Image 1 (cartoon, rainbow, N blue to C red):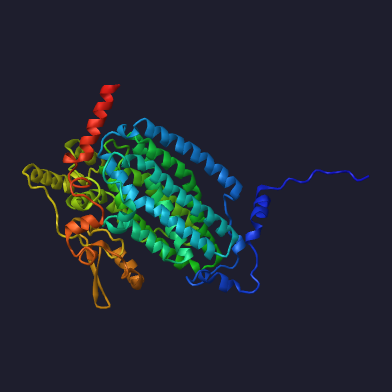
Image 2 (tube, rainbow, N blue to C red):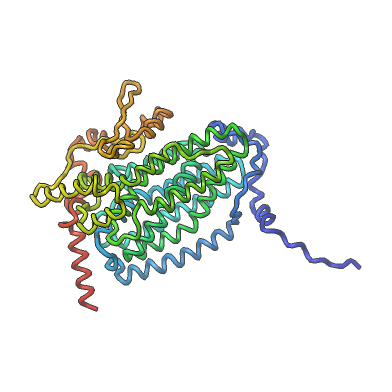
Length: 506
């Protein structure tokens, strides 16, 4: 009589392989080159797709279980936030300006990333990449949805949260984040993975979701904290996917090294320019600050970045080309950007203000070598103009960089008193840039960037015909309600009135 033996328990790796094996069929009536045409055209050489290792190896069954648990916790907290008038627990209505920028620039970027991952998951031949991209596509659309749901409660009470989807495509400062994602989504699958997996997830996300969410908690905004922490567990997986893709390309063939290095140079600088928005939110738009942009950069940029490039050095990767210029710019970018937002505040969907003496003292402490020398005198001059009844407003149109689409408000490396401006001629047209790095990116792919949609040239075209009032209607803004000086804003009056009433009723 045969003895019955217990079946050997499968390892997690073997079980994962069985759960995902049906994705790895060999095509019969079409060649692999025809099925996956975009796997070759960027010049990346891959000899063995089975070498791709997905470090998480989540099955869809496990994925839905984890995400459903996070969803239950998330919606329980934001429901409690809404029912208990959580919008009155924030420190000051100034804080809402940061949330408005986030909703217009970052949340649509999450939605764009989901479309990009759905596409590149189809374009990669390897099973590991297909599964990983599929899950990240679902992650990204979930992030967009949870962010919109969390911030929708503020839309009931304050101006500027409406029409964010339309404003993402029309208003000038949102074109910065939009152009970043449009650039990535119009690239090949491997470059897309560098753009999002490295630049957005590793460089940008750490500097946004960790310190800024801490700032949200410090300012009493539990709705934002909740969606931030709900997303951050996904971001760890996303960063790992991006780094795994870089290592996979470098290990497959030595000819891939210069291509990957070029993409790292490009997307580091593109991501760093998008961080201009984040730096201003942290230094100027949090009434109670948990750390400065410089301190956040030292932790999540310098320390993490140095560790990453040290790890990649064994493959021949060096630090990105613009690293030294970025390190210098960190002490200036938030001040330069806020000065720009203030002078063009009539064309924004949030309120701007002159920092108080207390705010400037804090900034001087955090930026001891730059703020008092270069930026306090400017703010003091602007304060005098406002006191005299002639606030500083720049009704001239900003000159936008053809690459990153930011106004050319940044200064020359080594000279904070001189605005950095570059020009290039291409096919009879003149193009402007905010830095050498943006110009170099343009000149490497000029046919791509001459198609960029820039808000300022559009101001002189139909349907708005160069009329500022018509432009305000087109971007769904009401002058004085959604923008302008914070001191006289309806948001400030409503917040103080409602919170005063709530305090008296307790």
